[in-house]
Amino acid sequence: MKDSNGEQKRLMLVDDDPNLVLLVRDYLEFRGYDVITAENGRVALEILEQELPDLMICDIMMPEMDGYTLVKQIREDPRTGWIPVLFLSAKGQSQDKVKGLNTGADVYIVKPFEPEELVAQVESSLRQASRLTQRPNPNVDNGPKLRVRRNVELTPTELRVVQLVAQGLANRDIARIMKVSQRTIESHVSNMLGKTGLHNRTELARWALESKKA
Image (cartoon, rainbow, N blue to C red):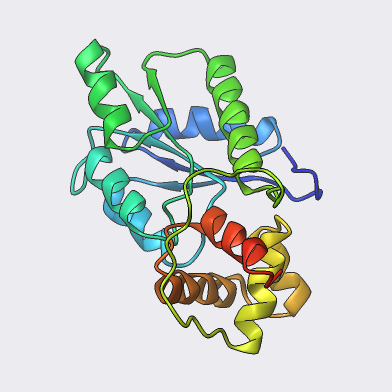
């Protein structure tokens, strides 16, 4: 599956059941997605240090680090907090779903599930994430006033990066334009979040537009 820029969407599948991983990966790859896998939360975090997927599909009950702990850490990190997460779990009680969603997952799917349902939820979550990262209209009230630290000074490179972020471009697109690695762009975004005190790329884009930096 490709986005509006023709980029193939990359998904991360985190599950310790090799049979389910094989089934889901094959199905998603058949539908056009690029799929990377991890057998538990610890391995997933190691992969996230190197690359960021467009969406994560995650089991809950896993050895070494379960899905709850993984999602909690993802949501606390500005680099990864924006990533949509779908929980897959055999735990189907209402309280399980509530706990999963309260932990930070965007969607909760109970095993066994229909592959078509999973694909529909993936596509829906990707569309929603895309809407959140689109360039906001500065003439429209975009929510609560941003609280930004005083006297924020950006380097020329950071200024260029935030201008491209405000245009709604993904990190990998910005990396290609600036002829550097995606990891370098992620580092610049993380540094700017630290300087400004903002929480995610969407707020960073709003700030760039409202402060006339974009």
